[in-house]
Image: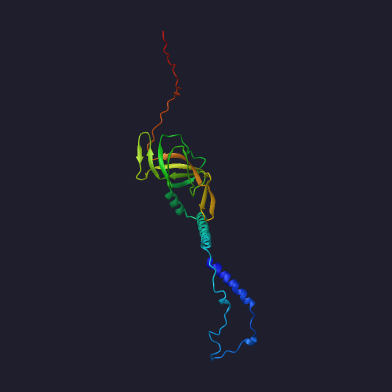
Length: 258
Protein backbone atom coordinates (compact mmCIF):
# COMPACT_ATOMS: atom_id res chain seq x y z
CA UNK A 1 0.00 0.00 0.00
CA UNK A 2 2.85 2.43 0.83
CA UNK A 3 4.53 1.83 -2.52
CA UNK A 4 1.21 2.28 -4.29
CA UNK A 5 0.60 5.66 -2.63
CA UNK A 6 4.14 6.78 -3.43
CA UNK A 7 3.70 5.80 -7.06
CA UNK A 8 0.38 7.67 -7.27
CA UNK A 9 1.90 10.89 -5.88
CA UNK A 10 4.87 10.51 -8.24
CA UNK A 11 2.59 10.20 -11.27
CA UNK A 12 0.48 13.16 -10.11
CA UNK A 13 3.49 15.50 -9.91
CA UNK A 14 4.82 14.26 -13.22
CA UNK A 15 1.57 14.93 -15.06
CA UNK A 16 1.40 18.42 -13.52
CA UNK A 17 4.89 19.31 -14.74
CA UNK A 18 4.30 17.90 -18.21
CA UNK A 19 1.11 19.92 -18.58
CA UNK A 20 3.01 23.15 -17.72
CA UNK A 21 5.62 22.63 -20.45
CA UNK A 22 4.64 23.90 -23.93
CA UNK A 23 4.46 21.24 -26.63
CA UNK A 24 7.13 21.65 -29.32
CA UNK A 25 6.14 22.98 -32.75
CA UNK A 26 6.56 21.07 -35.98
CA UNK A 27 9.33 23.40 -37.14
CA UNK A 28 11.63 22.25 -34.34
CA UNK A 29 11.70 18.66 -35.57
CA UNK A 30 14.57 17.73 -37.90
CA UNK A 31 14.59 14.91 -40.42
CA UNK A 32 16.27 11.75 -39.28
CA UNK A 33 19.69 11.06 -40.71
CA UNK A 34 22.00 8.11 -40.43
CA UNK A 35 25.03 10.25 -39.45
CA UNK A 36 25.47 10.97 -35.76
CA UNK A 37 25.20 14.55 -34.54
CA UNK A 38 28.27 15.48 -32.49
CA UNK A 39 26.56 18.53 -31.01
CA UNK A 40 24.24 16.34 -28.95
CA UNK A 41 26.22 14.63 -26.24
CA UNK A 42 25.34 13.28 -22.82
CA UNK A 43 26.93 16.17 -20.84
CA UNK A 44 25.06 18.76 -22.93
CA UNK A 45 21.63 17.33 -22.15
CA UNK A 46 19.40 19.67 -20.21
CA UNK A 47 18.07 18.43 -16.85
CA UNK A 48 14.66 16.88 -17.34
CA UNK A 49 11.61 17.18 -15.13
CA UNK A 50 12.26 13.96 -13.24
CA UNK A 51 15.59 15.19 -11.77
CA UNK A 52 13.81 17.59 -9.40
CA UNK A 53 11.54 14.78 -8.13
CA UNK A 54 14.16 12.08 -7.69
CA UNK A 55 13.38 11.59 -3.99
CA UNK A 56 10.48 9.42 -2.76
CA UNK A 57 8.18 9.84 0.17
CA UNK A 58 8.84 7.45 3.04
CA UNK A 59 5.90 6.45 5.22
CA UNK A 60 6.13 5.49 8.84
CA UNK A 61 5.80 1.90 9.99
CA UNK A 62 2.40 2.56 11.56
CA UNK A 63 0.88 3.33 8.17
CA UNK A 64 2.18 0.10 6.66
CA UNK A 65 0.94 -1.87 9.66
CA UNK A 66 -2.54 -0.38 9.26
CA UNK A 67 -2.59 -1.28 5.57
CA UNK A 68 -1.49 -4.83 6.36
CA UNK A 69 -4.22 -5.10 9.01
CA UNK A 70 -6.80 -3.91 6.49
CA UNK A 71 -5.63 -6.56 4.04
CA UNK A 72 -5.87 -9.26 6.74
CA UNK A 73 -9.43 -8.22 7.57
CA UNK A 74 -10.38 -8.30 3.89
CA UNK A 75 -8.84 -11.78 3.50
CA UNK A 76 -10.68 -13.11 6.55
CA UNK A 77 -14.01 -11.72 5.32
CA UNK A 78 -13.37 -13.26 1.89
CA UNK A 79 -12.68 -16.65 3.53
CA UNK A 80 -15.94 -16.50 5.50
CA UNK A 81 -17.87 -15.64 2.33
CA UNK A 82 -16.31 -18.61 0.53
CA UNK A 83 -17.32 -20.95 3.39
CA UNK A 84 -20.91 -19.67 3.19
CA UNK A 85 -20.95 -20.25 -0.57
CA UNK A 86 -19.69 -23.83 -0.12
CA UNK A 87 -22.38 -24.57 2.49
CA UNK A 88 -25.09 -23.18 0.19
CA UNK A 89 -23.77 -25.33 -2.68
CA UNK A 90 -23.97 -28.46 -0.47
CA UNK A 91 -27.58 -27.68 0.44
CA UNK A 92 -28.61 -27.30 -3.20
CA UNK A 93 -26.94 -30.51 -4.36
CA UNK A 94 -29.07 -33.24 -5.94
CA UNK A 95 -28.56 -36.74 -4.51
CA UNK A 96 -29.40 -40.02 -6.18
CA UNK A 97 -31.40 -42.65 -4.21
CA UNK A 98 -28.23 -44.73 -3.72
CA UNK A 99 -26.31 -41.72 -2.38
CA UNK A 100 -29.15 -40.82 -0.02
CA UNK A 101 -29.29 -44.34 1.37
CA UNK A 102 -25.50 -44.57 1.78
CA UNK A 103 -25.22 -41.19 3.53
CA UNK A 104 -28.15 -41.97 5.84
CA UNK A 105 -26.57 -45.33 6.73
CA UNK A 106 -23.30 -43.57 7.56
CA UNK A 107 -25.18 -41.26 9.95
CA UNK A 108 -27.00 -44.21 11.53
CA UNK A 109 -30.59 -44.38 10.24
CA UNK A 110 -32.72 -45.66 7.38
CA UNK A 111 -35.92 -44.11 6.05
CA UNK A 112 -38.73 -46.69 5.79
CA UNK A 113 -41.52 -44.48 4.50
CA UNK A 114 -44.31 -42.16 5.61
CA UNK A 115 -46.53 -43.04 8.55
CA UNK A 116 -49.98 -44.30 7.51
CA UNK A 117 -53.24 -43.87 9.39
CA UNK A 118 -53.62 -47.63 9.74
CA UNK A 119 -50.19 -48.05 11.39
CA UNK A 120 -50.22 -48.73 15.12
CA UNK A 121 -46.62 -47.97 15.94
CA UNK A 122 -47.08 -46.52 19.40
CA UNK A 123 -47.10 -49.21 22.08
CA UNK A 124 -47.28 -49.39 25.85
CA UNK A 125 -44.14 -48.93 27.90
CA UNK A 126 -41.74 -51.89 27.97
CA UNK A 127 -38.86 -52.25 30.51
CA UNK A 128 -36.21 -52.35 27.78
CA UNK A 129 -33.59 -49.71 26.90
CA UNK A 130 -31.04 -49.24 24.14
CA UNK A 131 -28.02 -47.05 23.45
CA UNK A 132 -28.03 -45.80 19.85
CA UNK A 133 -25.59 -43.64 17.91
CA UNK A 134 -26.82 -40.96 15.50
CA UNK A 135 -24.01 -39.09 13.83
CA UNK A 136 -21.47 -38.35 16.54
CA UNK A 137 -23.94 -38.45 19.46
CA UNK A 138 -25.16 -41.35 21.60
CA UNK A 139 -28.58 -41.60 23.27
CA UNK A 140 -30.06 -43.94 25.84
CA UNK A 141 -33.67 -44.49 24.81
CA UNK A 142 -36.69 -46.55 25.80
CA UNK A 143 -40.07 -47.15 24.28
CA UNK A 144 -42.03 -43.87 24.12
CA UNK A 145 -39.05 -41.51 24.67
CA UNK A 146 -38.45 -38.43 22.51
CA UNK A 147 -34.97 -37.18 21.62
CA UNK A 148 -33.56 -34.19 19.74
CA UNK A 149 -30.78 -34.82 17.23
CA UNK A 150 -29.05 -32.70 14.66
CA UNK A 151 -31.10 -32.12 11.52
CA UNK A 152 -31.48 -35.41 9.62
CA UNK A 153 -31.45 -35.06 5.85
CA UNK A 154 -33.64 -37.01 3.45
CA UNK A 155 -36.54 -37.39 5.92
CA UNK A 156 -39.72 -35.41 6.51
CA UNK A 157 -42.24 -35.13 9.33
CA UNK A 158 -44.18 -38.37 10.02
CA UNK A 159 -41.54 -40.52 8.32
CA UNK A 160 -40.69 -43.88 9.91
CA UNK A 161 -37.00 -44.48 10.64
CA UNK A 162 -34.88 -47.43 11.70
CA UNK A 163 -31.87 -46.56 13.86
CA UNK A 164 -29.43 -49.34 13.02
CA UNK A 165 -26.36 -48.26 15.02
CA UNK A 166 -27.32 -49.94 18.31
CA UNK A 167 -24.41 -50.13 20.74
CA UNK A 168 -26.11 -51.76 23.72
CA UNK A 169 -29.40 -53.41 24.72
CA UNK A 170 -30.61 -53.93 28.25
CA UNK A 171 -33.54 -55.35 30.19
CA UNK A 172 -34.16 -56.48 33.81
CA UNK A 173 -32.94 -60.00 32.92
CA UNK A 174 -30.06 -59.51 30.43
CA UNK A 175 -27.65 -57.06 28.83
CA UNK A 176 -26.20 -57.31 25.31
CA UNK A 177 -23.11 -55.26 24.40
CA UNK A 178 -22.08 -54.69 20.80
CA UNK A 179 -18.57 -54.84 19.33
CA UNK A 180 -19.04 -52.01 18.48
CA UNK A 181 -22.65 -52.42 17.22
CA UNK A 182 -25.28 -55.15 17.35
CA UNK A 183 -26.11 -56.28 13.79
CA UNK A 184 -29.46 -57.91 14.71
CA UNK A 185 -30.76 -55.03 16.83
CA UNK A 186 -32.87 -52.12 15.64
CA UNK A 187 -34.67 -49.16 17.15
CA UNK A 188 -37.77 -47.84 15.40
CA UNK A 189 -38.66 -44.15 15.55
CA UNK A 190 -40.96 -41.57 13.96
CA UNK A 191 -40.00 -38.03 12.94
CA UNK A 192 -42.23 -35.62 14.85
CA UNK A 193 -40.84 -32.23 13.80
CA UNK A 194 -37.90 -30.22 12.49
CA UNK A 195 -37.14 -27.35 14.86
CA UNK A 196 -34.49 -24.75 15.70
CA UNK A 197 -32.49 -24.63 18.90
CA UNK A 198 -32.02 -21.50 21.03
CA UNK A 199 -29.89 -18.76 19.49
CA UNK A 200 -26.16 -18.71 20.24
CA UNK A 201 -24.17 -15.49 19.82
CA UNK A 202 -20.72 -15.77 18.21
CA UNK A 203 -18.52 -12.72 18.78
CA UNK A 204 -15.03 -12.40 17.28
CA UNK A 205 -12.55 -9.66 18.12
CA UNK A 206 -8.90 -8.92 17.37
CA UNK A 207 -7.49 -6.28 19.65
CA UNK A 208 -5.75 -3.27 18.13
CA UNK A 209 -6.94 -4.42 14.69
CA UNK A 210 -10.35 -2.72 14.56
CA UNK A 211 -11.89 -6.16 13.87
CA UNK A 212 -15.23 -7.12 15.41
CA UNK A 213 -17.76 -9.58 14.07
CA UNK A 214 -21.04 -10.62 15.68
CA UNK A 215 -23.12 -13.49 14.38
CA UNK A 216 -26.10 -15.48 15.64
CA UNK A 217 -26.61 -19.20 15.09
CA UNK A 218 -29.61 -21.46 15.64
CA UNK A 219 -28.86 -25.15 15.25
CA UNK A 220 -31.36 -27.15 13.20
CA UNK A 221 -32.77 -30.11 15.15
CA UNK A 222 -34.98 -33.12 14.47
CA UNK A 223 -37.32 -34.52 17.12
CA UNK A 224 -37.70 -38.31 17.10
CA UNK A 225 -40.24 -40.43 19.01
CA UNK A 226 -39.02 -43.95 19.86
CA UNK A 227 -41.71 -46.53 19.10
CA UNK A 228 -40.08 -49.94 19.43
CA UNK A 229 -36.83 -51.71 20.36
CA UNK A 230 -36.00 -55.03 18.71
CA UNK A 231 -33.20 -57.55 19.26
CA UNK A 232 -33.72 -58.53 22.90
CA UNK A 233 -36.21 -60.69 24.79
CA UNK A 234 -38.83 -58.52 26.44
CA UNK A 235 -40.05 -59.65 29.85
CA UNK A 236 -43.77 -60.02 30.33
CA UNK A 237 -45.42 -57.47 32.54
CA UNK A 238 -47.59 -59.16 35.13
CA UNK A 239 -50.77 -57.24 35.67
CA UNK A 240 -53.17 -58.34 38.43
CA UNK A 241 -56.81 -57.42 38.37
CA UNK A 242 -56.64 -56.08 41.90
CA UNK A 243 -55.90 -52.40 42.15
CA UNK A 244 -52.91 -51.35 44.15
CA UNK A 245 -53.73 -50.30 47.71
CA UNK A 246 -52.47 -46.99 48.90
CA UNK A 247 -50.10 -47.14 51.81
CA UNK A 248 -51.79 -46.24 55.09
CA UNK A 249 -49.69 -44.81 57.87
CA UNK A 250 -50.19 -46.41 61.26
CA UNK A 251 -50.48 -44.06 64.23
CA UNK A 252 -47.33 -43.96 66.27
CA UNK A 253 -47.49 -45.05 69.86
CA UNK A 254 -46.54 -42.41 72.39
CA UNK A 255 -45.01 -43.58 75.62
CA UNK A 256 -46.85 -42.31 78.72
CA UNK A 257 -45.40 -42.08 82.17
CA UNK A 258 -47.43 -43.14 85.20
